[in-house]
Picture 1 (cartoon, rainbow, N blue to C red):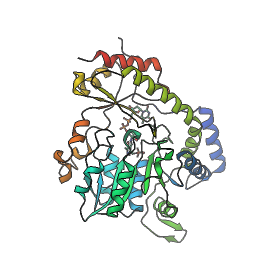
Picture 2: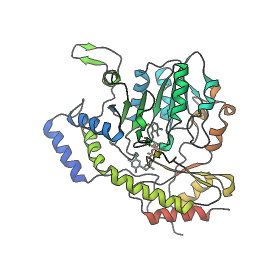
Picture 3: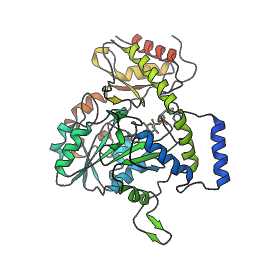
Picture 4: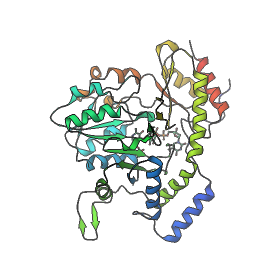
Length: 373
Ligand code: T4K
């Protein structure tokens, strides 16, 4: 088989028709209102509340700053229990808030926080749980809430991958105290860079909005040490346009995922991510696990596919607990994280984006099958 002429990346951003973008920018220019909670910002907040089925939402300039603010909004301190199997941003927001991350192992099937392993990690300093709906797969939100209630802890979810994920029709952003969504260009729904916090408690909105705007209450009062987390009007406009393309993008991705599943079914040593029946998929990533039975390992597949111009990604290798800045923490000891250490060597995200052609998906699957020993 010949390599693809152009690289096939793990993802490509949804690009709206440029004429729509130009028209929106013209409107913004005419209004002379470019940022600081303008009309498009307000409209996008309202639209996203409906799309995500959440009662409260605040937009941000990126998901990471949103998560920093989520922790501030909950007044967390001391130690927070979190997963090592995630993008660096999830862990990093804790030391940015003077909090020590306490790594908890993940569940072998969902690859999210394992509630059964949480209680042994609690200390008098524990104030919260920070879970990640990795690849849009929901954490065990019910068990986590039960534990949090018993110990009086706050629950924050990193839902960066979970735009549109629902459990039994309930928006994923309604679980826990606060959830963060990322609207980075690599996400199914994006605003170039951007993000949001969602919450059920209506009293949180003023505090979160103050925290993202320097704590400025009015011209003469600054009431808390806030940061600049604001999304500008051009980004909000891109978001409003991209919302029009959302259903189409989801449908295209669904077909691609089905094609992968059909073509990879029954291959010994390739496990495809299984989203439970009562869960609506976010179609953010298509992850496979390469196990021993395949005969060659994940890294081999990753390298070989590159030779054919297929650029897969080992999201999320290495574990955050193995970064030089965290590996000295007691909870980062591999003995505490056996499942995470096992699965992190197996995971591989294959290309998934609306414009990926189904015959390209079939070729990628054939290339993988040909590598089996
Ligand atoms: N929590 C979790 C669980 C996350 O996954 C993330 C971000 C965050 C928190 C933080 O949210 P933000 O602060 O970012 O809103 C990318 C994204 O930059 C990052 O947002 C995302 N997760 C992560 C999973 O993926 P990289 O380092 O893999 O990006 P990069 O530049 O290698 O891009 C991946 C591929 O996407 C490229 O090979 C090609 C394609 N691409 C990328 C960009 C930026 C394009 O085609 N066009 C583009 O403009 O992190």
